[in-house]
Image (tube, rainbow, N blue to C red; front, side):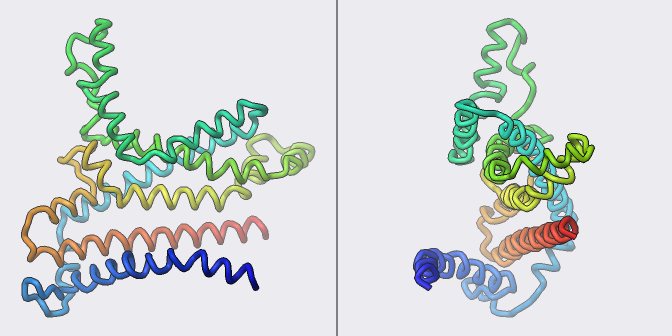
Length: 289
């Protein structure tokens, strides 16, 4: 009973903050997106702004581009992070502690810090380009590959992977460290190959953590603004940048449309996360059965 009271007390500040700021702002966004915006004498509740968004071909194209981009980035982060976590699990002694601490550093750094670092490193006027130019490997900075503000959003992907791969490693290494090695030994004794042992033993145990990490990475990628704005290609803009450009146009009569776009982005992320959680639970039941 005392532990429950302690838990309630610990969660109370967060709940108050969540209700006063996030939930209140989200409800106001929904109300505004429905056309109620008295500042510009809009008081009629309507779904026209949602219909306008879904009838806009550019919005559909940008949304699909953002979805695919977010999926690919999150999937790469999880695959590479899983591989590194498995390698780290087999490491022993002081090197394991060193690598574990090293993977925690990018998780603590904000994305803006990584963006600034990449701008200094891999832009056509960056440090790497300057070194190659002095070595004579390239004759001008224009010969250096365009990795920032490029159509393929390579700089954005590198930023996400730099941050998200260590996050996946940190999330999985805790589960892998607590996993009994006997399970794998039993599988090997029964004639299973390394791949079969991974699929039948390791993967089911880390499945929940892996999917949770994927959901977090995808949700951030899908809604992140500052990284694609600073490193992305504005001709191939992603959804958050598309919404921001509407917002900064200065036409407050478009505010209901901006809020409708924000609500669509948020609701889609929530629904997609719930679908993945449902799939994760179904897979867990199937593995147990």
